[in-house]
Image (cartoon, rainbow, N blue to C red; front, side):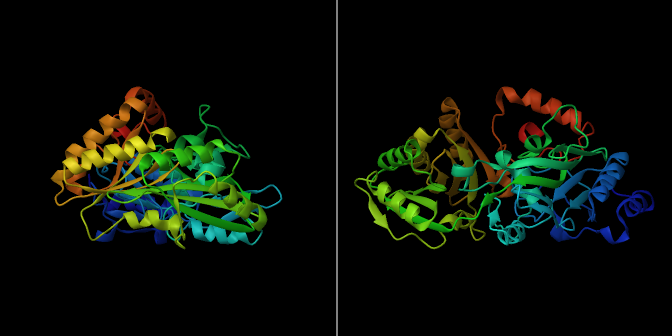
Length: 422
């Protein structure tokens, strides 16, 4: 469907102002779509008005924040419009005494953290590419980072949200409730929904104090089994870490990074206790950017793919061994950076795109009996044309489709990008 300037454009300009409507360029293209129009509202009401116009004209919409994760998920089934949130970039309220903050969806994570740090506080997440990633984008993709081991995921930290629904309704849930929608907990429902249920325009978060001191210690283990036993021992102990990360790849010793925060004496004491749990391991000098090494899995110079996996914490060693077997059989290299709670990122690298198809299916089959999963995030287009990014949605898919039907009955928001083609 093409956008006709003589009818739809006039309505968009009326809804969000002429400055917020422009021709899309080749740089705005998406997997599965070449949008024609770029919409950049500067208010929540403008986002709602843009969606109202799009719904009226049956135009498909791809919400976009910083654009750091546009390749994640399945390709969209076409989109005539890009709806950017970058002009909604303000920290609306920082109630430091209550340790909460309300921020617009287009605010970059790094900027939000700078504002909060002025009062000795932070949003306890460390997502990918914080200088470019936005609040709305990390919520839509549920990108929390290694701090999750201590503070929980974004679903635990977001306590309220304002959402523009597909029909132009502005709905608010949590915090200062103005309107609820059919009893849904909107902040948690939309976290990880990839922009298929609504467009987040504001969010309210629970905050935590900035630590006075941070200390990381790294150990290299002779085997996957010993590394896994160590991580389970740390999780079962009274030690309170704010990062517990496993790094592994073919023909290399697995490395476990552990981070402690607080006052220096407490952090140093925790590191001392950690040594007693790390028998047969070699202590290493931690890299200065060890907690940002995940970003290095994205290599634009190669035809590699990056996946997100989930396993039981006790199954990390078994997963690593299955990676060795499967990738060796198909002549692939692999590298994993995972959190000891059982979620992480996996990079597969081969000589040709065809080499990935069978290993992806085999790894999913290996993970399924234990309730694990493997989601393909970024990969060459020819792979996503042949492999569903999400895999089997299981028994939850009918419910997910009913929620989609309730909130976006015309299917105009990121059609096809989420689980089961939602």
